[in-house]
Length: 368
Ligand SMILES: Cc1cc2nc3c(=O)[nH]c(=O)nc-3n(C[C@H](O)[C@H](O)[C@H](O)COP(=O)(O)OP(=O)(O)OC[C@H]3O[C@@H](n4cnc5c(N)ncnc54)[C@H](O)[C@@H]3O)c2cc1C
Image 1 (spheres, rainbow, N blue to C red):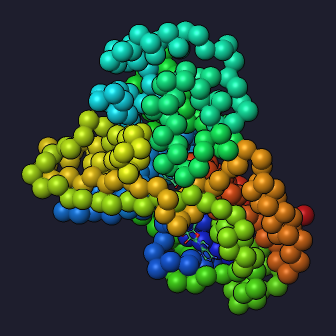
Image 2 (image 1 turned 90 degrees about the vertical axis):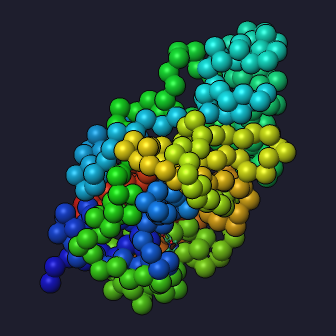
């Protein structure tokens, strides 16, 4: 009999694991809680216009083998992502460029604060990190209120790690959001990419798997890759807090493009959404077509989107204890992978890399 394995969750991590297991000669059975594959990464279409009901997804990576894999499985178009932010009634590039700050109304005061910043960033917490990077006023107008909306908590209770890689001040005129050498968007949407990765597997939809159900889905000793949250896996939902977003999508007829970039950040507390997203920006050849879809992203939904990395490290400690329980699980070798199982924010390229690595680990351990 050939080798086999089980993957729990058919998001992009699970799909990448399935793909790699197939390449390594494994027959794979996938169990997915929802009635659709793709997890958080999903593209829908209205009148031929793409939108993403779970939030904007731009593929960008430095991982060349991952880029080669995704472009082999799906047709990617070149897309360079741009974000703007509304400050003092103006839309300026995000991340903020120093030159744009000086052109804001009363920008001289902001520049004065920038010139008086400490030489190194203060990593005590999210707020100290950002204030030492941007100055107090720019922080209070651009980052503080956005963060209160996004996280529903005081920014000083968040770890500085939440800001790293998300908040920066630029001085170089580089306007693209990402600097990665490989960037693009799948012409037919992300669903096609995930389905291509799953093409050889048996996919079971509408099936929630927990540690208690392991005997229903896997033979004793059969390797299992888990991409679900570990508190859900141990049937203790809620042990790990998450912050979620909810999107409202609106079709605007007769409009070709509604906003100057795919994403417009709205930091003001008076605006209940955090940003608007127009996915159509990703596909140049649609730009002249009449009709577009704009999504408003509202924070505070009951969904597992962003792990809450508190400054005290409490939630990461809970995650670590759940990981120890996974290691001690005797019936099956279990490998956690992906954003839910790792309780971390990771981009799609990293999710794919972790899925591929989890599969390779199974094959390596089988040969020991
Ligand atoms: C708002 C937002 C915007 C983002 N934008 C980008 C971006 O622009 N670029 C980028 O690279 N990344 C982006 N990401 C990150 C990207 O969404 C993740 O990298 C990706 O979703 C990780 O996939 P995953 O398979 O690990 O998790 P998921 O997509 O959550 O998939 C997990 C799957 O497991 C299933 N599942 C869960 N529990 C069980 C269970 N007990 N039994 C069976 N099935 C179960 C779920 O239904 C789901 O299908 C963004 C994330 C967010 C929140």
